[in-house]
Length: 291
Image 1 (spheres, rainbow, N blue to C red):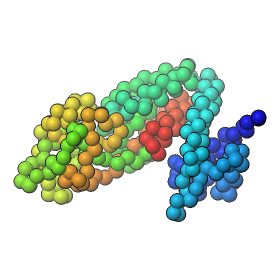
Image 2 (image 1 turned 120 degrees about the vertical axis):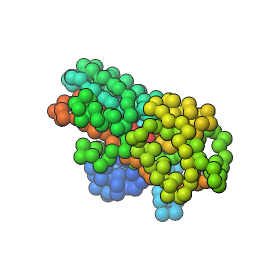
Image 3 (image 1 turned 30 degrees about the vertical axis):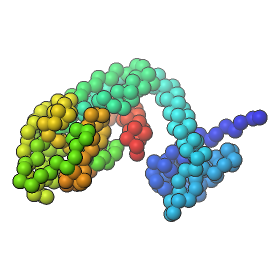
Image 4 (image 1 turned 90 degrees about the vertical axis):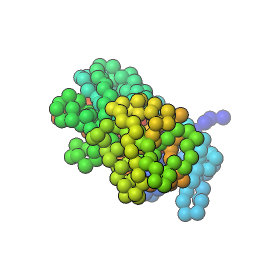
């Protein structure tokens, strides 16, 4: 029995549909017309002999077969793209000074940087972890070539990677914590910090009294203070330790705004290594942040 060779472009369209939420937006993402993208999916279904999508109300969701194909499609395309980058990366040389927020330093980004090194063996990558505001200050001073930071989407050099929800965070098992006439204990970064500012504005807007019970300049110290019960904090959901949990209105807390995660490039726009790393970070963010 001969097995079909699955169409790589069709698999990429399948992933785009799931990432974008609609066939129209997916077609735009992969650079095809909507009818061409639809034909790609039909071709896959013909090759496999089973439908990949089914209707659920007004939306389309994956069938059991579609779920299986989706899991393999991601792996197939990752290997394809890794091979293509490896071949292209042989000719790329130079140095990239990359700055990132601590929120991503212990999750998916180190693995992404490792893959970049494998694909571009002639490129030297110097990595530093800093607070978001300080990252952008150092970028402006010429100390970084590329920065991944949250909260500065209004800058002219910002290239949006994702919009992430902010959330209140407390120890696992936390119950209702807002009590009348009792200030809410907070664990926060030292000023200036846009998370700190957003949290205090949300509490003031809903007239919830608060006090900063624990202040720090270190993310690991912040997590430790929250885990010890010294106060609750707020960040995005990226990299929350297992000892902590998300808090929301059920705990008496007000809603929070979203924050933009962006890449910011420095002045050396002609450095091909920077553009290659930028592209890989965006690609890996799509998978690891559930976009």
